[in-house]
Amino acid sequence: EVQLVESGGGLVQPGGSLRLSCEASGFTFSVHQMDWVRQAPGKGLEWLSYISGSGRAMYYADSVEGRFTISRDNAKNSLFLEMNSLTVEDTAVYYCARTYQLPGPGHLDYWGQGTVVTVSS
Amino acid sequence: DILMTQSPSSLSASVGDRVTITCRASQGISNYLAWFQQKPGKAPKLLIYEALTLQSGVPSRFSGSRSGTDFTLTISSLQPEDVATYYCQKYNSAPRTFGQGTKVEIK
Image 1 (cartoon, each protein chain N blue to C red):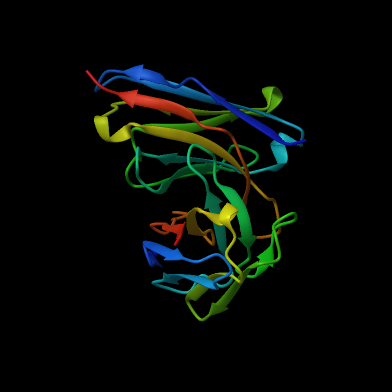
Image 2 (image 1 turned 60 degrees about the horizontal axis):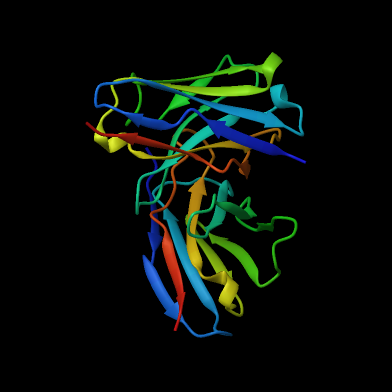
């Protein structure tokens, strides 16, 4: 059974940093591209970033480029999101999601339950 | 970047009604469009991928279609358990943008 479990959320002051983790199980982690998506309170879904299975290719939304860094440890079946220079606008539920691997672009097929990040003084 | 315009933002329909939600891409994305259902406090759930393909386990009353850069999610007979917010997402390339969402309620 595919499982994705996020952790690392919490309360942080504006300007601070936080590192989110996503532990994967039930599939061959290193084969799959992985994404981070967030949802601010009462708002829609916002795609943030993805990383290739090898970890060599990463892409970011403009809203987080230069502040957030996605990475992965395939030996530990783990995905990370390092978040710096946080602002109140980064307050959201953060989800990790797996991309279904195809020859070509793949869709998000499994999601974690999310971890809550609150940026407030 | 390609914009995804989803409409309507909300709708109210009766049980048994046919419901249609539309997502328009500002440029061609081939069939690289997915639809998700999200219930309050829960993670999104994949309904449709490659614009037309029903995810395993999803009821057959859900269907997807495409006409050029216009994509449609149809619920053929709305059920009480379909109350949720629905999102489209394009995934042909980064950024993998979501539509703004459509909140579906029962009248």
